[in-house]
Length: 307
Image (tube, rainbow, N blue to C red; front, side, top):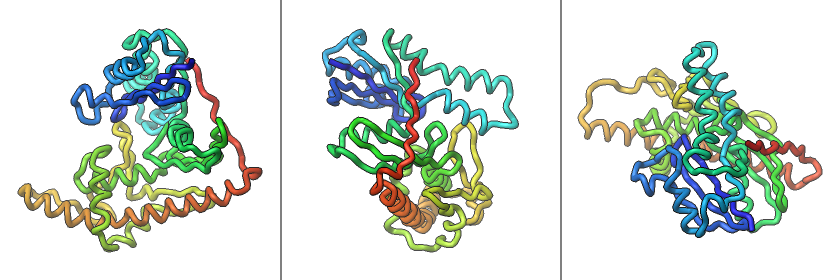
């Protein structure tokens, strides 16, 4: 019998799950126990819950899988901070890269095998292996993983092959987060509100939106970084006050006036979600064209790191 504990942590919504011989036994987010919304801390309580549901001790776990490679992520963090990288910053981000393995050992008291899975491989696996399909084309899109923000792949049986990637800072997810922030909502929290407002939008800003992102050959796309600036520590793209939509008002507002401004701006600006959908449809068409001829696939499988 194989018992595997999966862990994600330190960004938002830390979580843990337990698999027994490939069967999902339990899964939980840390916020359910800490009562801290989007709790990013190490999911100790969630892990203990999963072990309890599986009637296991930590010594019964054969492997713990971690959802991203912290050292590849470290490369991106250093690159993003150049050329203004201080010695103190290097110390703290290097320490953060070592934190997952250290806390798995110290907090859970685990002494066994730890495997690190690339972030988008983890996304693809959680979808494909529970889909019931013997093979599938795979498209993953999010803010950012280690470097990848969008991946194209092909899965069959127990194998997932990623053959194309879009890399940071080009990211639909970060563009979505940027506009979420511009409208006054919290990043990694208010995106669903933006999505909910989108159907009420009209193409008032269609021309400006088209300036933000351009489709390229082979499933690639580029963000227009003249309008979007990189914010290192929150690792998100923000739209400056002086943007292609004009100044965001900084005059004092009553809560009511602020709410009305956000609602009006959101309903107009959220129309850009449909432009994002157009891009996603283009990506799907690209991956279908490739995956109907599996022999044409360029299999680039990232090796799983072991610590």
